[in-house]
Length: 399
Image (cartoon, rainbow, N blue to C red; front, top):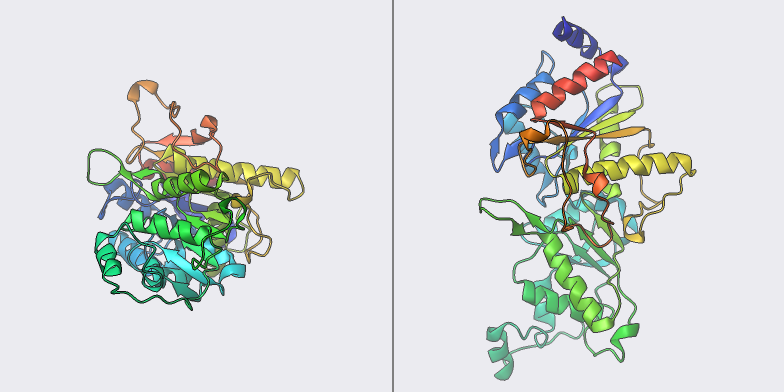
C-alpha cells in the first residue's frame, strides 16, 4: 500500500515535491569505480516509469575532476541521464567568485587543471611550470635545474606578468617545487624579481583553496595525504617566514557553507527544469564522512537558521563568507538534513544501536573551521543509501 501511495504522489512531482537530495559519491554511491548495489536500488527507487528522476538530485564530491567525465560515469553506473550541471566538485563553487575571473591566475593542481579553471570562469591562466620557466633561479630543490644554472644554461623572463590570484584546486605533483615557488610569489606580491625588504609587511595576493581534506581513503590500508595536507604545509611555511597566518580569500569544497549553498542553487535550478513550481524547503545530504560531509550539512543547516534569525547576518570567518555578488537562486531551504551511511569512511559499531559516535581526540579539519564535535553527528544514520531513500520517501509522503 505504501509503495502504491508513493508512486501516486511522485508521479505528480511538479505539484508535490519541495525537497531535493544530494549525494556524495565515493563511499555512498560507489567504491572507486564500482557502484554499490544499495545505490543501484536507491536510484531505481527515485526513477519514474520512463527512467527519469522523480525528485531533483545533485552529486557533491570533494574530488577535482571534469564534471562531464563524472556525469558520464554516474550515468553509466545507474543507467540514468546525468547532466554535468548536476555534478559539484570541490572547485565548482568558485564559479561564484566572478570578481577574480579576469585576473591573471596561477592554477595549482594536476591533470586537466587549466580546463577545470576555465570551466569555472577563470580566463587568464598560468601554471607553476610557467613560473618555473620564467624564473629558473627559484627552483633549487630541482637538482637538474641546479646543474643548468651552474652551467649558465638558462634564460630568465623578467617580463613575465605579475600573478594576481592563486587558485589551489588540488594537491600538485612535486610539492617541494610548488611550495617554494608559491612562497616566492606570496612574498613578492606575485612578481618574484626582487626580494622583499620585510617579509612581514608584504600585502598578500588573494588565495582561493578548494578541498581542505587532510587525508582520503584509496586502495591502501591507511589514509593518504590529500589537498588539506598540502595547504597545511603552505600555511606552516608562510607563518614561519612572515609571522602571520596565511589569509584565504575563499575556501570552497565540503564542508564549507558556500558549497552547500551552491548545491541548493543547483537543486532549485534542476527543480525548475523538471517543472516543479514549489520552492525547495528541505535538502537531504548523504555522506560517508562525519567530519566532512556531515559537518558541512550541519554547518549549512546552522547557516540557514542564523541567516533567518539575524536578518541575513551570519558570523563565519572571512574565508567562508558567501560573497554578496554571487549569482544564486533565492535561498528557500529551511532545513538541511545530514544522512550518514555506513558503506564508506564511517564504520558503525552495531553495539551502539543507532547512536553515532563521532568523537575523536585528534581534529583533522581545517584551521578556519572550528572543531565542534557535535556537528559531526548526523540527523540520521542509515546502513546504506537505499535505507536512507526509503526513509525519505516515507517521511515526505507523510508530510
